Image 1 (tube, rainbow, N blue to C red):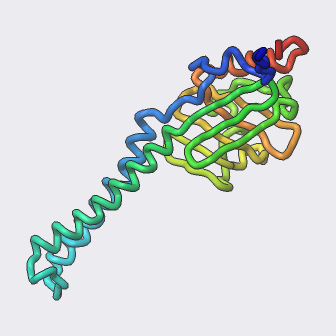
Image 2: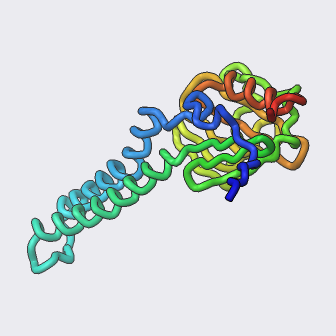
Image 3: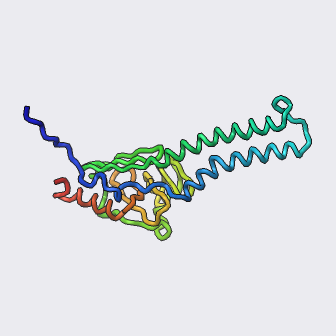
Length: 207
Protein backbone atom coordinates (compact mmCIF):
# COMPACT_ATOMS: atom_id res chain seq x y z
CA UNK A 1 0.00 0.00 0.00
CA UNK A 2 1.37 3.38 -0.99
CA UNK A 3 1.63 5.69 2.04
CA UNK A 4 -0.51 8.80 1.86
CA UNK A 5 1.59 11.93 2.29
CA UNK A 6 0.76 14.16 5.24
CA UNK A 7 -0.57 17.37 3.72
CA UNK A 8 -1.24 19.19 6.96
CA UNK A 9 0.66 22.47 7.25
CA UNK A 10 3.72 22.20 9.42
CA UNK A 11 5.86 25.01 10.71
CA UNK A 12 9.53 24.13 10.72
CA UNK A 13 9.98 26.68 13.55
CA UNK A 14 7.28 25.10 15.71
CA UNK A 15 9.70 23.78 18.32
CA UNK A 16 12.00 26.82 18.31
CA UNK A 17 12.33 27.76 22.03
CA UNK A 18 12.78 31.43 21.14
CA UNK A 19 9.19 31.57 19.87
CA UNK A 20 7.68 30.19 23.07
CA UNK A 21 6.08 32.36 25.74
CA UNK A 22 8.44 33.44 28.51
CA UNK A 23 7.86 31.65 31.83
CA UNK A 24 7.10 33.60 35.01
CA UNK A 25 10.21 34.96 36.71
CA UNK A 26 11.42 35.10 40.30
CA UNK A 27 9.41 38.22 41.15
CA UNK A 28 6.14 36.54 40.18
CA UNK A 29 7.12 33.44 42.14
CA UNK A 30 7.89 35.52 45.23
CA UNK A 31 4.57 37.37 45.10
CA UNK A 32 2.59 34.20 44.50
CA UNK A 33 4.16 32.56 47.56
CA UNK A 34 3.70 35.68 49.68
CA UNK A 35 0.06 36.23 48.75
CA UNK A 36 -1.20 32.65 48.74
CA UNK A 37 0.86 31.08 51.55
CA UNK A 38 2.97 33.34 53.75
CA UNK A 39 0.44 36.14 54.28
CA UNK A 40 -2.57 33.93 55.17
CA UNK A 41 -0.48 31.86 57.60
CA UNK A 42 0.95 34.98 59.27
CA UNK A 43 -2.51 36.56 59.56
CA UNK A 44 -3.88 33.38 61.14
CA UNK A 45 -1.00 33.15 63.61
CA UNK A 46 -1.34 36.85 64.44
CA UNK A 47 -5.09 36.51 65.05
CA UNK A 48 -4.51 33.61 67.43
CA UNK A 49 -1.79 35.53 69.27
CA UNK A 50 -4.06 38.57 69.62
CA UNK A 51 -6.89 36.41 70.99
CA UNK A 52 -4.59 34.81 73.56
CA UNK A 53 -3.11 38.13 74.67
CA UNK A 54 -6.60 39.66 74.89
CA UNK A 55 -7.38 37.38 77.80
CA UNK A 56 -10.93 36.59 76.67
CA UNK A 57 -12.53 33.15 76.60
CA UNK A 58 -11.10 30.84 73.95
CA UNK A 59 -12.64 27.86 72.19
CA UNK A 60 -9.84 25.35 72.58
CA UNK A 61 -9.54 21.89 71.07
CA UNK A 62 -9.54 19.42 73.98
CA UNK A 63 -8.77 22.39 76.28
CA UNK A 64 -5.27 22.56 74.81
CA UNK A 65 -3.89 25.86 73.50
CA UNK A 66 -0.94 24.13 71.83
CA UNK A 67 -3.19 21.66 70.01
CA UNK A 68 -5.55 24.44 68.95
CA UNK A 69 -2.69 26.51 67.52
CA UNK A 70 -1.14 23.50 65.78
CA UNK A 71 -4.41 22.40 64.15
CA UNK A 72 -5.48 25.90 63.13
CA UNK A 73 -2.17 27.13 61.75
CA UNK A 74 -1.33 23.71 60.33
CA UNK A 75 -4.69 23.43 58.58
CA UNK A 76 -4.35 26.88 57.04
CA UNK A 77 -0.79 26.05 55.97
CA UNK A 78 -1.91 22.84 54.25
CA UNK A 79 -4.78 24.55 52.41
CA UNK A 80 -2.69 27.54 51.36
CA UNK A 81 0.22 25.31 50.41
CA UNK A 82 -2.03 23.30 48.10
CA UNK A 83 -3.38 26.50 46.52
CA UNK A 84 0.14 27.89 46.06
CA UNK A 85 1.35 24.65 44.48
CA UNK A 86 -1.61 24.49 42.10
CA UNK A 87 -1.32 28.12 41.00
CA UNK A 88 2.44 27.79 40.55
CA UNK A 89 1.88 24.85 38.20
CA UNK A 90 -0.76 26.76 36.25
CA UNK A 91 1.50 29.79 35.90
CA UNK A 92 4.09 27.60 34.21
CA UNK A 93 1.46 26.53 31.66
CA UNK A 94 2.78 28.81 28.93
CA UNK A 95 2.64 27.54 25.36
CA UNK A 96 2.53 28.91 21.84
CA UNK A 97 1.65 26.83 18.78
CA UNK A 98 2.04 28.28 15.32
CA UNK A 99 0.72 26.71 12.12
CA UNK A 100 0.43 28.09 8.62
CA UNK A 101 -2.85 29.83 9.40
CA UNK A 102 -3.46 29.92 13.18
CA UNK A 103 -1.67 31.16 16.28
CA UNK A 104 -2.75 29.25 19.40
CA UNK A 105 -1.85 30.40 22.89
CA UNK A 106 -2.16 28.83 26.34
CA UNK A 107 -1.37 30.84 29.45
CA UNK A 108 -2.28 29.67 32.99
CA UNK A 109 -6.10 29.26 33.01
CA UNK A 110 -6.65 30.78 29.58
CA UNK A 111 -6.50 29.95 25.88
CA UNK A 112 -6.76 32.01 22.73
CA UNK A 113 -6.88 31.03 19.07
CA UNK A 114 -6.14 33.76 16.54
CA UNK A 115 -6.29 33.18 12.76
CA UNK A 116 -3.19 34.69 11.18
CA UNK A 117 -5.40 36.36 8.58
CA UNK A 118 -6.86 38.53 11.36
CA UNK A 119 -3.47 39.85 12.51
CA UNK A 120 -2.56 43.30 11.22
CA UNK A 121 1.15 42.58 11.10
CA UNK A 122 2.02 45.84 9.37
CA UNK A 123 0.99 47.61 12.59
CA UNK A 124 2.51 45.08 15.02
CA UNK A 125 5.40 46.32 17.10
CA UNK A 126 7.83 45.53 19.88
CA UNK A 127 7.02 47.67 22.90
CA UNK A 128 8.53 48.61 26.24
CA UNK A 129 5.58 49.15 28.58
CA UNK A 130 7.55 51.67 30.63
CA UNK A 131 7.78 53.87 27.54
CA UNK A 132 4.58 52.99 25.67
CA UNK A 133 2.11 53.10 28.54
CA UNK A 134 -0.91 52.98 26.21
CA UNK A 135 -0.24 49.25 25.83
CA UNK A 136 -0.28 48.56 29.56
CA UNK A 137 -3.08 46.30 30.85
CA UNK A 138 -5.46 48.59 32.73
CA UNK A 139 -8.65 46.65 33.54
CA UNK A 140 -8.82 42.91 34.18
CA UNK A 141 -11.85 41.50 32.33
CA UNK A 142 -11.21 37.79 32.90
CA UNK A 143 -7.60 37.26 33.83
CA UNK A 144 -4.97 36.40 36.41
CA UNK A 145 -2.57 39.06 37.61
CA UNK A 146 0.21 39.36 40.16
CA UNK A 147 3.33 41.55 40.06
CA UNK A 148 5.55 40.19 37.29
CA UNK A 149 2.88 38.09 35.55
CA UNK A 150 -0.38 38.72 33.70
CA UNK A 151 -2.48 36.20 31.87
CA UNK A 152 -5.93 36.27 30.28
CA UNK A 153 -8.25 38.99 29.05
CA UNK A 154 -7.64 42.65 29.83
CA UNK A 155 -8.52 46.09 28.56
CA UNK A 156 -5.39 48.04 27.74
CA UNK A 157 -5.03 51.74 28.36
CA UNK A 158 -5.75 52.23 24.66
CA UNK A 159 -9.17 50.67 25.43
CA UNK A 160 -8.58 47.63 23.24
CA UNK A 161 -9.74 44.22 24.49
CA UNK A 162 -6.59 42.12 24.50
CA UNK A 163 -5.44 38.61 25.30
CA UNK A 164 -2.38 39.10 27.49
CA UNK A 165 0.42 36.62 28.26
CA UNK A 166 3.35 38.54 29.71
CA UNK A 167 5.97 37.97 32.39
CA UNK A 168 8.63 40.29 33.79
CA UNK A 169 10.79 40.93 30.74
CA UNK A 170 11.36 44.35 29.23
CA UNK A 171 10.14 43.85 25.65
CA UNK A 172 6.64 42.71 24.68
CA UNK A 173 5.04 42.01 21.32
CA UNK A 174 1.81 43.82 20.52
CA UNK A 175 -0.20 42.20 17.74
CA UNK A 176 -3.31 44.15 16.71
CA UNK A 177 -6.19 42.19 15.28
CA UNK A 178 -8.75 43.13 12.68
CA UNK A 179 -11.46 41.45 14.77
CA UNK A 180 -12.63 42.12 18.30
CA UNK A 181 -9.34 41.75 20.16
CA UNK A 182 -5.56 42.17 20.05
CA UNK A 183 -2.67 40.19 21.54
CA UNK A 184 -0.01 41.37 23.99
CA UNK A 185 2.60 38.65 24.34
CA UNK A 186 6.03 38.09 25.80
CA UNK A 187 7.84 35.43 23.79
CA UNK A 188 11.40 34.60 24.73
CA UNK A 189 12.41 36.47 21.57
CA UNK A 190 9.64 38.89 20.53
CA UNK A 191 11.47 39.96 17.36
CA UNK A 192 11.87 36.34 16.21
CA UNK A 193 8.16 35.64 16.61
CA UNK A 194 7.18 38.78 14.73
CA UNK A 195 9.59 37.88 11.92
CA UNK A 196 8.15 34.37 11.69
CA UNK A 197 4.57 35.66 11.60
CA UNK A 198 5.47 38.01 8.78
CA UNK A 199 7.15 35.15 6.90
CA UNK A 200 3.96 33.10 7.15
CA UNK A 201 1.89 36.06 5.98
CA UNK A 202 4.04 36.50 2.87
CA UNK A 203 3.04 34.72 -0.38
CA UNK A 204 5.88 32.20 0.01
CA UNK A 205 5.52 31.82 3.77
CA UNK A 206 3.73 28.47 3.81
CA UNK A 207 6.13 26.60 1.59
